[in-house]
Length: 172
Image (cartoon, rainbow, N blue to C red; front, side, top):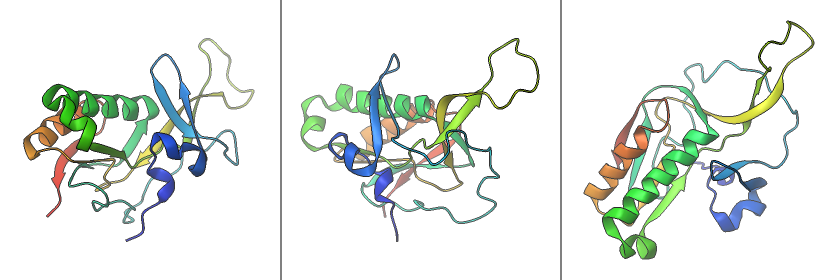
């Protein structure tokens, strides 16, 4: 099983994998340092191919996506914060010592948009955000170091943040 190391990012590994951690109004935003092209095309999706990251590689629990779609960088960060907040409320100091969360998707494609009331033509709009492609069966979040009930509660809370449907997944 091949896992892309660039998608598994912790705060001290950010400079190694070529991504920026930027503080904004939303919080901490993770996006690539450099892309080959400033604006990307929309693409076709997975087209039935088996995606990377369909098996748990780091934690005992995870959330598995039920349909293909796009996750915005805001949804990824909101789900990560919700999971972390649920662990802190449920377990107080124990999570700080033993609990871990892995985000296995990176928002690496630009999303462009034109301003309102602009006439047709004159090229593509300016980059406004970042998205990550998620395929059916891909695991965007993994967690470990917590009990099954706390992990299930955190996964349920985090599932409301992105616009795609997910289900709880346990290592067997």
